[in-house]
Amino acid sequence: MAKKPNPTIGKSLALMGQLGLSIAFPIALFTVGGNYLDGFFHTNSHILLLFGLLLGLISGIYGAYRLLKSSLS
Image (spheres, rainbow, N blue to C red):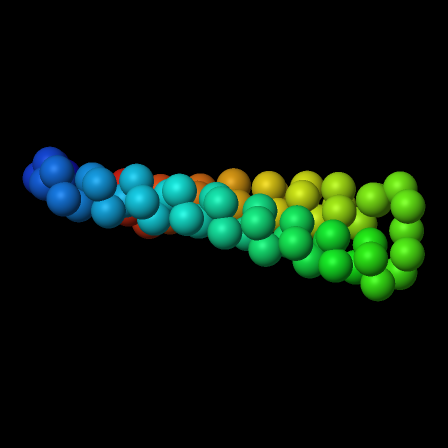
């Protein structure tokens, strides 16, 4: 099996930027959506905000996993 060449510094920096965005964007999007739904349904416990945060975290980690899996294979 042939060994893959080492990536350049630019490609490594681009991958780090993509990883950061693939984690941060879903967390922010789902958290804002959960906060909006809490205001819309007038829930005082902020349960939808926390659910959105958790869903965004899971989605972000899964997206980062898929990105790393495709770039490292």
